[in-house]
Length: 401
Image (cartoon, rainbow, N blue to C red):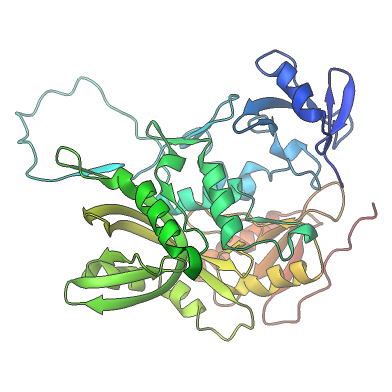
């Protein structure tokens, strides 16, 4: 599929048609709905307005689109997102998505208020699923399209693109009543010639952290981990493209991060033959003016092209698909116990249905091994399997246009 086409009031317009904006503006806030023509009969969509009018897929309809369509999205059970939709992820037809998360937007200083006498319970609240900080990062990467690859993306992903599309994705996401873009900072590409202007924009963006009536507002930083060094007061965590603004953290807290995420840190030094990036998502607050302290953090591996991966065992497959100019999507774990039950990759250019690609590594822990074995047993005949102690099999053939 080369150009996405829509049927609007009896007219067929491509996504690159200069008349598309006018056509969808006319039906915005009406009962008329455009249809994506990627499959026979089309798929109903809706019109949203951000910086401009855009045609967006209806909630829970992504898998109805052709795998080659930009609006295609895997079935919910093929990634960790399926466990969150409907409880932690609430989509509206107005172009916004509400995320219910398990972390706060503020921290309070001072002593807590004494509890009153225990009362007889008059109701019981049923706990609902909440999204973790890691899952928030996965959601942003998916909404920004970084878990998806088409050959035209070659050479077009860099820090500037990461900054632009993560921030844009956050504009339509609401967390605890706050538009996420207001609390998200993704570093701009650093340049020595304009470092003062970049630093000023960062300070203006993070002015939201200013202490207010004993409350510390929090914000989210997403960037590539560069290094950490120890100081008498703790550790300084350095993020690439932020050479003048380290994130502070207590030494014991950083030690725990290194223990919990030891396999990810080790992946940076592994002899895998592919470049790996270690991404940090940090919930931060201002310790003092322009001094940023990590309140909570999580980590994620990505390929050289910022495609999230669960471990280095997936990198050779991802790189092979990029080198062979294939189209694919990488299912993400979110808050699932493990990712082994999902396809490692879904190949999108092998026909009318996506082809699940599975990677089986001997280094998966026993629970992941069992989950992967069950997934392979219950999978269909189209699935492709690579056991990493063997040579990679031939990839499924690309479908003819």
